[in-house]
Image (cartoon, rainbow, N blue to C red; front, side, top):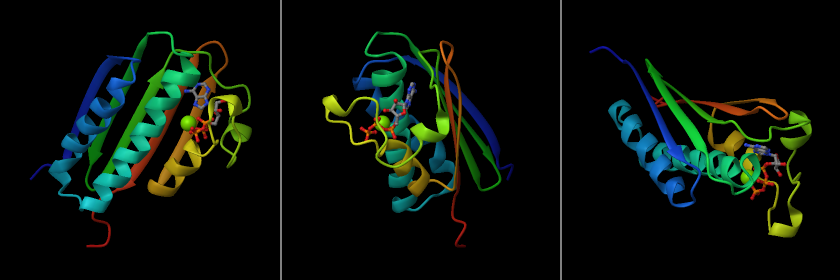
Length: 143
Ligand SMILES: Nc1ncnc2c1ncn2[C@@H]1O[C@H](COP(=O)(O)OP(=O)(O)OP(=O)(O)O)[C@@H](O)[C@H]1O
Ligand SMILES: [Mg+2]
């Protein structure tokens, strides 16, 4: 069997699309026969990334978020892309507990959660242009 595949999807930055996006990725990843735990990890990470696009990238304005997923062997790569405000200092933003919205009940743990539940996390951002979050998870790597 050929274990390479790709998908790409655009959807609006509405909060109801958080669950849509994580369900899509879970459905796409299903062909790798992940464990329940691996699926839960992927869904959690995608939710955090999409939430960030909605509340930080687009600051609750409505615009398109792009979701890409790529399978190569047992490697699942995911990209969550917005064309929003971007991040001034990515390293700082990725520190645990760092948030620019403490008044909105944000705990600054989204990137830490993505890092914890995925095997690789890369954030590319240009202020004024937008942000791309790249995540990798190796599925069934215990087998
Ligand atoms: N897509 C994005 N566009 C612009 N800024 C972002 C984006 N994603 C994250 N950030 C910035 O990085 C900071 C840290 O993000 P992170 O997800 O770790 O925490 P948070 O969203 O503030 O809080 P939490 O995720 O715990 O609710 C955010 O406060 C925001 O300033
Ligand atoms: Mg967040």
